Length: 237
Image (cartoon, rainbow, N blue to C red):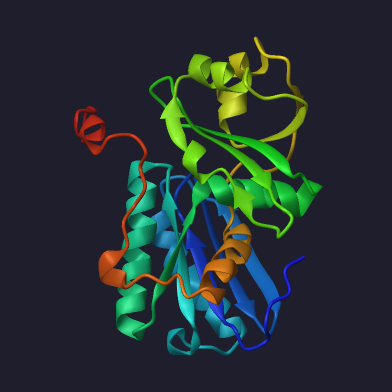
């Protein structure tokens, strides 16, 4: 469990997948709201933020930072979340902290199952997954940022050939591509961390807050992993 200082206030929001969530760190405690809201992110996220602040009798200006999900995920969802976080941070004159959706899923697996070795796969459509391999170190930080990438299920299976032992799995990619379970020697444990949640972004953001890893709203950048040109070629884009 993360030991939060009582005077740190962070608010996290996420719209990167079909879920929409908000979580507030205040007085060392986290309060969160999570909902499955396909295609309703723009209607739901701001009321959720406002309600969270109202419940704690806080204003945006009283926060130390806003936390947003950088992706990867739905191209539109990532843009919505970052755009709203930018606007709120600009208005309140507070900094942003960016968090990976893949790392948030790993943190969720730790919260729910105390898993320390996690394979994350989010369905990226187009026959691919957003993929990462995380291991929790002795200080409670996740190692594996360099493994984040978009690849085919077969390529993910090839990645697993270089690993061994038992691993927890997280993300929607495992249900979308059952072939991820075959062709490798690993023992895979099913978990409940399927979609990133704002409450799991807060421990990650707090680590960044403590070392001063803050971002100006003007400088926040999404992480798509897939080349943006690919998205522009999709029908209707």
